[in-house]
Length: 247
Image (cartoon, rainbow, N blue to C red):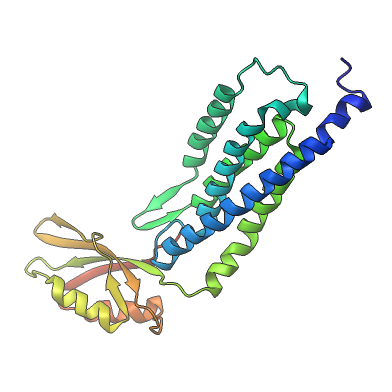
């Protein structure tokens, strides 16, 4: 068979394959919507992974899963079906997953690179779709992934949310801080200490508290300088560090 002939290449855009691509598109669209909803819930509560990360992962996962149901149409419908491509796809996704993990940077409660890691994984899904001959689906996945990275951050900024900040407090040697006092101070600023985020260190007779705080709903946001002034007034605090917990 002449694989470069017009007749052979025409198979990749046959009506049957186009119909399959349309069905794949609706699967991708549904996965994207559900992923964005999950991501918004996490973003609203100040978590690191937001709408873009969840949307990309859910979108790519759907793209890789749905094509398995149309294996008879792979490679223009004239591929060698006795060759199992699933282990190859699994190896690609696993390897790219490790690559994506390498771009994630965690510094305290601040995490960066999650969206980049998800986009790398999504790019792998695009490559797999192209490899099996689902060109239209690959194009759609590329466009949708690009839209997520360009515009979903603007949508997140427009939707109501509760941003989080990461705080580290170092106390004097003779001071024993109280969690209730700290919690009240944060409430005055419009924040509540996130449950399970408090960690306490003890070095040379001094305590160091680390925690993340989430903004209360419908509360005026304080700037980092404004919060730092309040932290400086806390009894026993010698040093502190404040930053946004971002992704």
